[in-house]
Length: 96
View: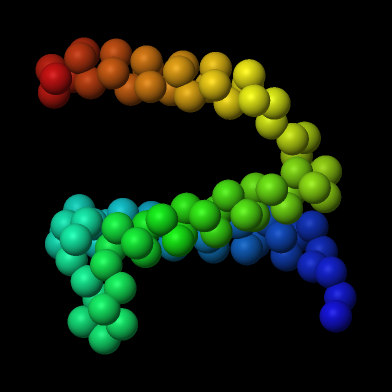
């Protein structure tokens, strides 16, 4: 079994991100506890699964050195910065 190329890894990452977008749309339309009529899988569980798939692909692109690995301090700082930015944006939009 061959290893995927860098291009294939990036293509799969993009597909996984699109799947997150798709399930987010389902949650917005039907709610996080709504379940798929054929599989019985709930939207909340599907979102978790898709986000884990994205995380797996991010780990792979870091392992292949397509992108350097994140440092834990970087993750904490970026998380805080993003949360602050969203709150500031929402405040300015008068949604909070």
